[in-house]
Image (cartoon, rainbow, N blue to C red):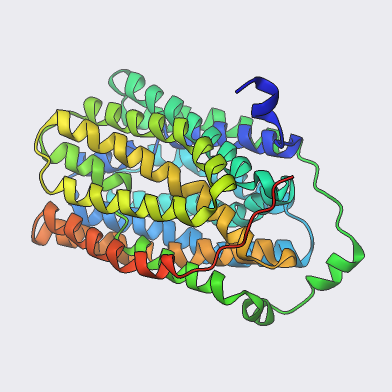
Length: 394
């Protein structure tokens, strides 16, 4: 694919938001893959890791539907994006002050409040800045830049951990976050018509009622799946469980994000061509197979394969889910729809993360992965009956 073909459909706003995600995740992934390892070094158990990750995502999710709705109502996305990224950036250095898991939990939750404010309005800008025929590609690009930042951040964490140790890395992570916030100032929002403005003055309750049945069904299927989606934190715990060092564990994390970054744009492009649902179903099936595979992993070479498969799976659902939500949503309720999706699936993260951690500590790691397989199997039939909108190509 030549350069012109690759960039076709990627507007100025999408490219800027890509760099915002790159620098933000560069900052975040200097910190986040270290948090589970840091917690373990402080003597915390797997249930604490699940609690911290789950509480953080749930807190963020509580805000997403409201920030999405209000960005629809006032026809402004950029202020929410700027405020959210700014809050996430200024809280990261606070991890350097932590010496106990309750304080880590508090700071992690504060950082995720920023994500809750920014995510739905940011995704709405991506949707509004791309033609429908390249929507999957646009979200794929945004997630790929996010992934590239994650790779760089994790590599820096790997290199700097033996030199700076945990707390100094948390301080250094502040710098790329500031660059991301400054990039947001370059975004130019599209002007909405008066007709569009009138449409978005509907109440929050009415906005919820106007979301189509297919979209609500997709949110239900995604929520059931999210309850059992163990995420990278438990993959890192699995690596520690079979005896890998912190440095090797971080390298596996880098491998996962490298695969994800390589695959996420192709996944979006494929979803533009054949539809979102086949890509998502394939991703869910891949995750189910991954959960079964983890029941038998006990060596580094097989764990490497698991991290590669997880990268492919994550690439198939991360951007495509967002594009599918926009496909199914009314034109004037994109922010509300994205916020509702992120909120409902995220609210399940706290009970899900805590439950997965309790299963791990009380029974065994295999119980956690078996639970994930069962819930994935339950979500697949619901996903299969959703009617997808046909995407028109120019």
